[in-house]
Length: 287
Image (cartoon, rainbow, N blue to C red; front, side, top):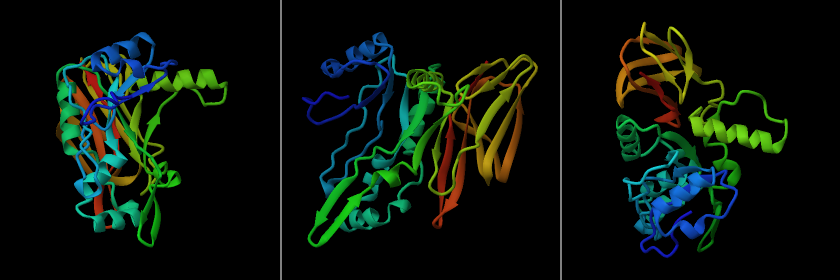
């Protein structure tokens, strides 16, 4: 949802679970966010950093008002937004249209910085990833190409959710369960094209409880982080946006702390000759 009368276009919002049309509130971002909350929906800032690509007449459609309140989270990694900075010329656009698997490298550094800044301010902000799939049909002289076909995009940057039971009970119950997992931050971003990210877990074990991503845990007596990766690779644990431990060529990682803070992890994988972002967890909040 965005204010279609605004020029230049900015500040898109992803809304889930509201069960009603909310576009009429888009003239004011805070009014829109308040309406989403009232409707019981989730609101995610879409492609918060989305730079221009003048060579293909695409403008900057980043988020502009960071003083608003009430959003659930933000779209940390957006596939189409990452594509735009790669297009330095029409030749680049043609190249990546035919080799889209070479585009993704990770979330925009400014998006990561903004997320860590929000978390450091005491807010709980859930990160999700999205393909922003449009399946554009490109024509340039004799060239015909579907840029980012859906079947490609949906195998690339995805949001994986942790739910308490398998899907299949009924559509309404399953939908509610998935939305609740997103609301709580029980999810992570996975770039599944190089290697499936299914099987990744990050848990924090305290004296009284075990926390998963999105949860809080008491640091009294110490907290043990356990990270399980689907394959051996590079893994970085961050506290308040700063790396505190890096592991290389590991699929199981353990870290013990007594310090409060916001802890999250990033994993990297080598694919097509380049180190690329692979997994970005949501935080565990250690109090």
